[in-house]
Structures are given as structure tokens and as C-alpha cells.
Length: 180
Image 1 (tube, one colour):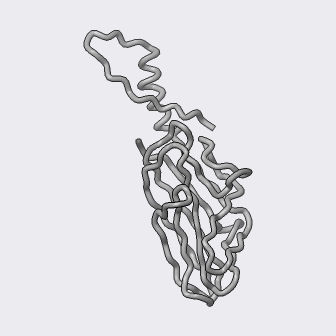
Image 2 (spheres, one colour):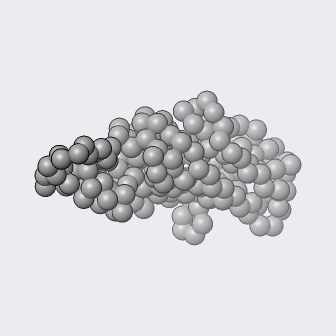
Image 3 (tube, helix red, strand yellow):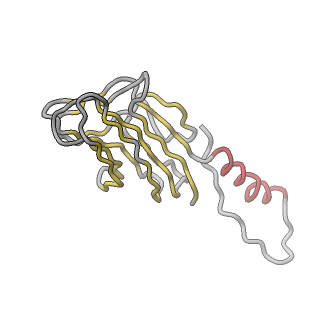
């Protein structure tokens, strides 16, 4: 995990002496943070997750591909990607979800939810009796420190239906800091 250490760039005044410490803090460290250390996370569900009929369910991500800023925990609140202190900004985030093939009902859906209250975008997939219903939405949103995003799903097949897991395409979620 890298430290969250973006510093608001300094406004220099006339005749001010530029020091190595100021250059390092306001220039070198910020460039390094934006180039290599800006918050990024990608997690996935290693096994299937059962989704009850007509129920909004948060997907639980138990494995990480990478997480350089403690966005996600595989132990506590595994459905959440939480913005770390000092890392507010605009984020691009997305998810990849598939429901197992099933002819019942009228559709499958996924969306993100901000702080368990605000729905951010949604994607619907038609039912299919012979192939999986695949969904892979992406979005951009301004997030504050401590905000969290969850991937939620719903299906109405008439019974429980699995969201796929590894190996192969399974449920995944990712988030990358774009800018302040």
C-alpha cells in the first residue's frame, strides 16, 4: 500500500527562495503520486454468489488483484470500496458481472451504490436460457474521503440465481483515481 500524500501545490511569491524540501514536497512527490501511487484497486469474487429472487444484493469481493491504497478489505465490509483519507477526487469505476443462464423472469441488473443510499448508474441485461447474462458498466463520479461504492445486483428469475465466480469471467469491481 502506498501512502496517500498528494499536497496542494504551493503558490510562490516574488523573491522567495526555492528550497529542495519545497520542490520535493510540492513537485517531485506530487508527480510521483499521480504517475504511480494514485489510488487504484481491483477485486473479484472467487466463487459464485447466490442472489435471491427480486432482492437487491451487494456483491462480496473476497480476493484482490491489486489495492495500493487500502480501498478494499477481504475481511471486513468486503462489498465496499472505501475512499481513503486524503484521496478525495474523481474516480472511474466499473464492474463485471454475469448471471448464470436461466429462462425465468424478465431481466438481470447491476448498479453501484454510493454510501448505501445513492444509486449511480445501472445496466440491464435480458434473460437468456442458454448463455449467461453479462453486464460490464463503467462510470466516473466525484468521491470524498470515507465515501464507499458497492456493486449491487438484482434478478427476477423466480428463484435464486448465481452470479459467476472464478475461474473465467466472474464478478469483479475496480476503481482508479482520475484527478481532484
